[in-house]
Image (cartoon, rainbow, N blue to C red; front, side, top):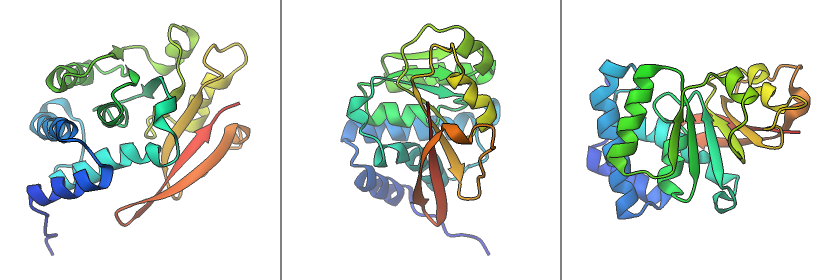
Length: 210
């Protein structure tokens, strides 16, 4: 049976009410969604092709961080394996004071991200082409939060907290499903786990740090 989709106008009305976006922010999200869906085949960005899915599973899911963190107290975030810009760009739209580092090694996705930054008029956003292991060995930023939607496993992410790593005072937030189980190797780094609902799905944010 075909699932009936919400009309686009209804999708955006519901989203704006949920996240309390300003007219300017809503316009940025709309441009972002349109460009993502237009360029998806070229850049291989997401398996989600319906507007309602993009808004819920990419935009709303990215903004879940604000349910558990006072975003006004954060200066810099770095998105590990950001891909099409999630979760960092939705957070940047809603909290424009953030300095954002987008860590992405794929050239096509870097091109897409550069176009999004220009299209949305975002400032203080940098694309970094280092892989994760190289990034943590070459400190050049002051980062408050690393964020990632399961781009790497938790053991690999735990490299940020090794002795001698300049980033080991940061917090890392990892978007996971309700069925995620932590590797014993990094279990001591897990400081808290927060649960939330995304439509009919149960999701969790895992906070890691020393």
